[in-house]
Amino acid sequence: MISLIYNWQQILRKAWSVRLIILAGLLTGLEAILVFFTPIDTPRWFPLLVFAITMSALVARLIAQRSIDENPDE
Image (cartoon, rainbow, N blue to C red; front, side, top):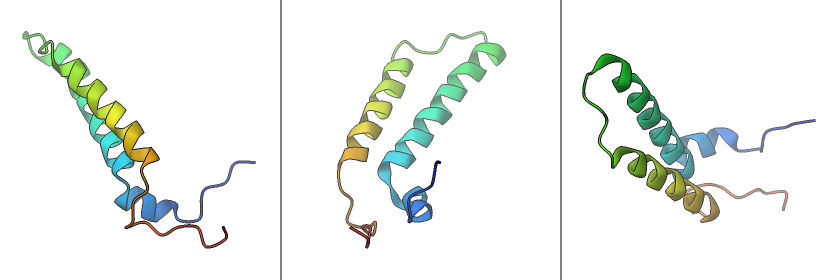
């Protein structure tokens, strides 16, 4: 059975990894939309930017953030 961690709402609001994942998702969506609505190709660096943000989210997920409460059960 899948269950959420006890402070999932706080993590959604404060975790940098979540913020970066959302930003990467928005940029990926923007890139997909631009293909359909503009005659201009997206810049070649745009996918690299999305990749860098996604990798930053991975690193941010591994770094402890003091503004988020730790699990009191541990």
